[in-house]
Amino acid sequence: MLAYLTYDLSTVLLLLILVVAVVADLRSHRIPNLLTLSAVVMGIGLQTYFLESRGLMAAVFGLMAGLVLFLPLYLKGAMGAGDVKLLAAIGCFVGPLAVLLAACFSLIAAVFYSLALMAVKGELFTTLRRYWTVFALRYYVPPGKSEVAAQRIPFAAAIAAGTLVQLWRSDDLIFYHLTSQVSFQLQAMGAMGAPL
Image: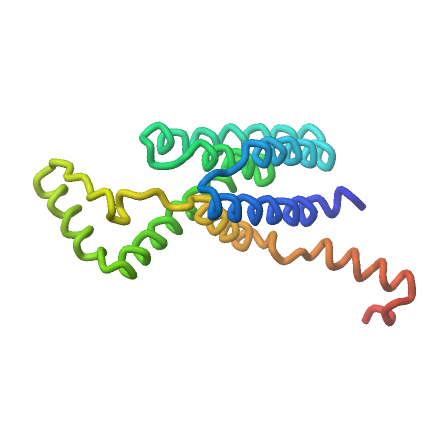
């Protein structure tokens, strides 16, 4: 029965980790090491317990993929180390291919968030004009310190959004196995009518 529920239980735990990471990032612009390390241990442990060697391999490869995907952005100063570690932890839960897609969706979410923030602050056309100049002249013109383009966004929210899109795409947010098992248990206890 536990092996049957592995994806649903792992998804519930992953969603809780994402909520904590987003709240921490919004409050302090940091994602605690304790959270990401605990998530890595839980992800590897759950996948190994439920799926044995196949789960262990998926978790380890997901961890490595998550580290490699955002490491160049961290080295360029575009994101913090906590964001890289959070994606690596997500990889332990979802595996290498899914973490790759989650990273892509996260980057798309970050772009939309940044564009929306620039539009709200009235900097969108100025920023687009500056990037057009950079492209045309092939010379980088840095943004002003007060501009949105010069500031870091709370990237945990973008990672959470990208991960949610990936989980939705793979139907992991339906919780079919978990709801079916709860329904079965309630029917076995006589709390619900007989199944149709």
